[in-house]
Amino acid sequence: MSVKNILYLNKLSGFTDLSLLALRLLTGAFLVWGVWDNILHQERMTEFIAFMTQFGFPYPALLAPLSVWMQFICGLLLCVGLFTRWAGLLMVFNFVVGFLMVHLGDDFRAQFPALILIGVNLHFVAVGGGRFALDRVFGGGETR
Image (tube, rainbow, N blue to C red; front, side, top):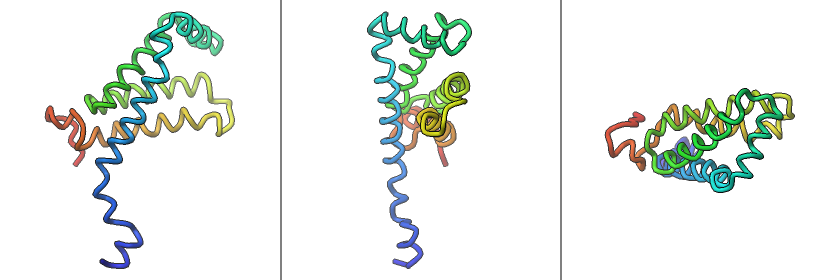
């Protein structure tokens, strides 16, 4: 083993697909968990509509359920790795809009969760679901 391989930990590149699976599962589970209450309880959806109204979103009664269901469905798709690039793209759009409407004037610490979700989903758009994804089973999502 060369010094270069040791310094750059080149052997760890064999775990790329496992790390992508972990990232998909964590992100997808977070998205599902984050909207589950809104789906189960109308009062939580009403709170989210009020939140969107407070921040000046147009048509909050329409966009709140759309955002919630989009996050829920995309979260499930990310977990199983199906239509991974589309799910990532929809979540990039969702969180860019949320960032611009809610967090643009915040400090970096408050912006960070939305920015991370944008960045992670951009990664899914670029690389797809990886080897352990349904995209690959159905012939899509090639990353190389």
